[in-house]
Structure formats: C-alpha cells, structure tokens
Image (cartoon, rainbow, N blue to C red; front, side):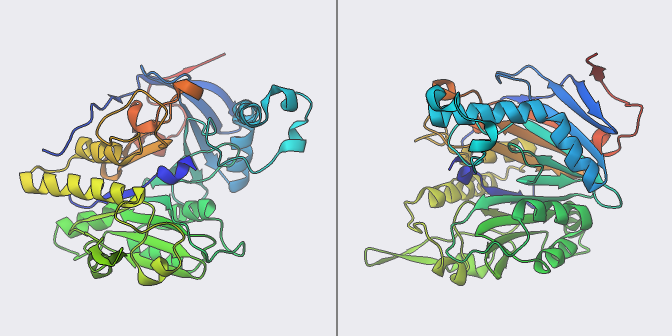
Length: 395
C-alpha cells in the first residue's frame, strides 16, 4: 500500500544530494464554509496540484470536532469515495450500486484516496494539534501541537495484532491533546494498548531546547517499534540499533547505523523481539533498509561537511527518502513511486512543510515531487475571531 512509503525522521540537532525542492508559502486562505466555530479554508498558493489543498479549523469538544469534520468535508468525502469505487469497480459495476452497498474498507488502496487536507483542532482543555486527514476519518497520521510535541507513523508488519486496543490514529491524537513533553507522551503511550505493528515517533521541541541549553541530557525523541502488548522505545544512538545484524546467505551483515542527536525509522525495526515477529524482509537490499540508509547517508554527509541542518536541509532529507521510483535523488516523470504524503516539522517556530501526492492515473506523481507548502501555524494555534491574517470569504 502506498502509505507504507511514509517514514519517520526527527532531527534533534539541527554536500548531500539536493533535490530541486519546490517550497511555496501560501498567499492566504479562502473560507469555503463554516459550521458552529469550525471552518474549512482553501489554501491559496501557486502550485501544480489539480485542486488547491484545504485547511480545516476544528475548535471545541470532540463532538464538535467530529461533526464539524464530517459536515464541512461531506462533499469532498463523497467525491473521494466515488472516485475510489469507479477506479476499483469500473462504471459498469459502480453505476448499479448504492454507496452504502459498497462501503468497504477502501482507505488503503493504490490510487486517489488521500484528500489534500491539513487541519487544526483544539479539544476543550487539551492541546492544539495540527493533523493530516485521510478519506472519511478525522484522525492523525502525523501531528504537531502548539506546545512543541510531534508524532508520526510508518508501517511495520508484525504478526502479533489485536482489535482490543486504542486505534493508533486516535491514539496519536490523544498523545497530542494531553502531553506537554516527551515523558508525558511516553507515559500516556505506555498506559494504552497497541493494536497492530507500526513504527511511531514522539519528539519534543521543549526537551530539545533543554538539551541544547545544557539543562537536560535527553532524550528528546523516541522511535516506538510496536506490536500487540509490546513497545520498544529507541532514543538516539541506541545500542540495539548499532548491534543489529542480518544473516545474508551465510554472511553476517551489519544493518543498524544509529547516530547521536538523530532518530529515524522507515518500515522495519531493530528491537530483537520486534524483529522476531517481523513479516517482511530485513535484508540490506530491502526497500525499507535502503531508505533507512538514504536518511543515514544524508545526515552523515551533512555532519562530515560541518553543515548545520536547517529546515530546508531537513525537507531535503524527507524528500530523498520518499519513494519516487528507482532513483531516490531524481523526480522521474512516471508513476513508479509510492509516496503519498511528505511532512517536515518545525515545532520551535510552529511551522510545517507538507506535500501531497499529485493528480491521478497516468498523471499521478509522488508527494516528494510535488510542492511543499510552508504553513505557519502560529496564527491558527492562537485563532480567536476576528482573524488577524489574510483570510477571504466565499459567499
């Protein structure tokens, strides 16, 4: 599935190959519709997306957030499902079926399922997270909140799974609402149960600031390798990762290369228990391992050059690791990639960089080869009517 191409990277301390990045700052936001205090906006920016990405603001209770999401995105959700049905079933079958008859679990198909939506929501009494949104469900694939925590996920196929736990998309939201630092995030994670195998990450800008000021020795981020009833927590430069080996046709091969002040994951794990239950290849030639090394090599090159890693460098690393076909350093003009969403956080400045997959069918292109929108979240996090930045209203 395309979402498996997402990966996790948290740069704690901020010439590798440089992709020709297209980073665009929006010129403003146009309000499309509202319900109660919730509003849906079109992000105004010069990009090559077929449709302008959207931003949805969802303040209030969980009821308000859920109802507002469904109400404001009803048209887009219906159109998204119809596109899915037709691409999977064809007009001959689709035209004779009712929507509810074919309301199957189609969120994870290969083409045209991810709405280009970014959202900001505030639970009464809780944190203020920004989120990604997929299809019909208000949830979290990645999230950044005003206090400086970030969370994200990448696939990790494990054979120990259950339905008896906290759905991971809502669980990440829970962490965002009720955590203000890394310890609180880890404590809340440990108090709830895993359902399926995923790599997750929790990173904390407040902890990173304390680390750089010398008032804390870290950690400032954890990679979480998970399966049913088990989570392995990895800070930077972890010895389990450093000592990981793989038997490749009788030859023992080193496959773990952690670094100080950097934490990252693709779609495999390094904890011995996690590796025992892993269902995909752990070979050095696996695509997950190759992308792990793309990130490592970029970090190592910047380190060797003595080049500080600012956020444009971080976006570059993010873009390199996103699957775009055979060559990770070139955007090929074809549909061979699988990356549908690419995000880099800048929590200290309450900014993020986000790109989505572009177009459909033969014109489809991966997120890392699309425009990255540089979204300032500061005004949205502090949003109280009237708006104090450029928002136009569609009557």
